[in-house]
Amino acid sequence: MSTDLLARRFATIGRHSPLFYDEPVHLVSGSGVWLTDDRGRRYLDAYNNVPHVGHAHARVVEAMCRQAATLNIHTRYLNERVVEYAEALLGRFERGLDRVLFTNSGSEANELAFRIAMQHTAASGILVTDYSYHGNTSLLAGATTGLRTHEGLAPNVRAFAVPDLDAAVHRGADPVQVRDEALQQVDRAIAELQRERHGVAAVILESIFSTEGLPRVPEGFVEGVAERVRDAGGLVIGDEVQAGLGRTGRTFWGYQRYALTPDLVTLGKPLGNGHPLAAVVTTPDLLEEFGSRNEYFNTFAGNPVSSAVGLKVLHVIDDEELVPRAQRLGERIRTDLSALTSRYPELGPVKGDGLFFGFSVFTDAEQTRPDAARTRSIVEAVKEEGVLLSRIGPTGSVLKIRPPLAIQDEEVPILIDAIGSAIARVRDADATL
Image (cartoon, one colour):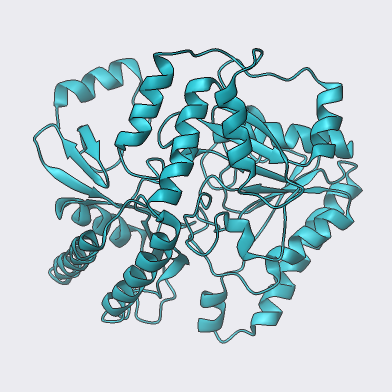
């Protein structure tokens, strides 16, 4: 790492802009799932979901450069590439989700989705899960529960807990009771919003609950939340920034794992494979209502270059069969990780779907006390082994493993061996204290 570059960053971007690791990694190039630092060391990227089809994918780069060399203009002019991409993207959704508004980021998409919901319902009440993150705008900062913000929870926002079925069953709880008690929290949150005259505009759900630590939720929980919100007059927003585009393997969109179709779906991070591209997908009726009341356009969103990139990402996902690969390699990695974690009583069961998974780290064999410090040490040790990953969850004690869908069969053992070696090193170091 260049200490001069770090000093220059602090002198310009400031010291509060987050950096990973005790010794930040200075990256200079990437290809597939591999990243190279300024010293020439290569790291297997098991963290980043933005380069969805792989870092610097040749076909995506070529599509971007070709369109940039031809034309880039905003969407108040007709352009074939923009409409072609809109058609291709909407073709991935169920009938009824037939309209798209492009944005530049997931934050913009979620802000716009809330704006549409609030205007449609004439209500301002928002429901979020109690350790979630959906973006950086002023409205979203007031609806953030999983990140430090000065604003705090806004008066029109209520949070409810996401039940962790594995943890509950480990304590001997009944799954149906766990679900019903969690849904009672939702009932109380809705009642509070109504009593305080906010009403219910929307609930926003990230289908894999990644920030919360990938809890396995009881059957019927997600559907129960949606039913209650709709009965109260609100809309359901599905945040697919994390789980979308085949990340979970079983389905193209994460919400499709449930008996649920959202009213609005927000997309971001992986949509442009690193190019700033995001969107809100919704119904014709909701878009017509919103459009008739508001002259909405976005100067940069959905431009021809972004559209060319997004379209090529979809083509690569299909041509390289990345969704079935996510399912197949996800199952393999889960099996290998489960064999690894079963050797250590202080490690929880492997959880997640497709190529997004993790496991909890505890201080005790009874798995009652989450160990954030040890989890952090494992993340650092895995980096020393040449693999990049992170940690999530309310206590920061869930190892977060989320490689690009471009990961290959021969790279799986590298990932597993690095995690295994890191865990052993951290345990040995703890034993000497």
